[in-house]
Amino acid sequence: MMVYDITRRSTYNHLSSWLTDARNLTHPNTVIFLIGNKSDLDGQRDVTYEEAKAFADENGLTFLECSAKTYVHFFFVCAVQSYLVLCFCLFPPAA
Image (tube, rainbow, N blue to C red; front, top):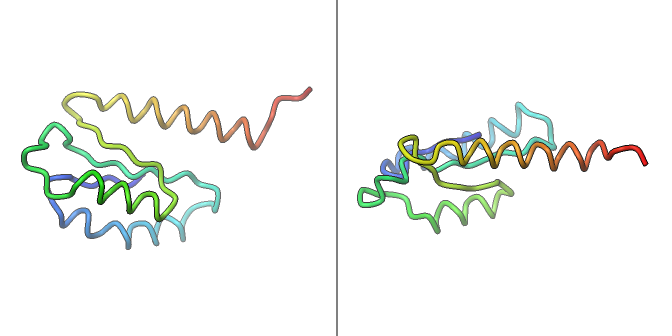
């Protein structure tokens, strides 16, 4: 999981190096989430949704924005769903 602050471009600018580290240090099939945090501060946004979504798409990442103040649980629901799908694909139930 890589988290950047949508109101601070400097955090977004580190994503490429973070992604390199994540890929070098994890299993090749690891699902990596890109999370734009502080979505409740849209008026102070310094990184557009479209820009971050494009980065995620180009790099095969699962992307969403959330706010620790409002819908932080949404990320965890998505993470669990992705994990369950991955487990089902890797270890299908016996017929």
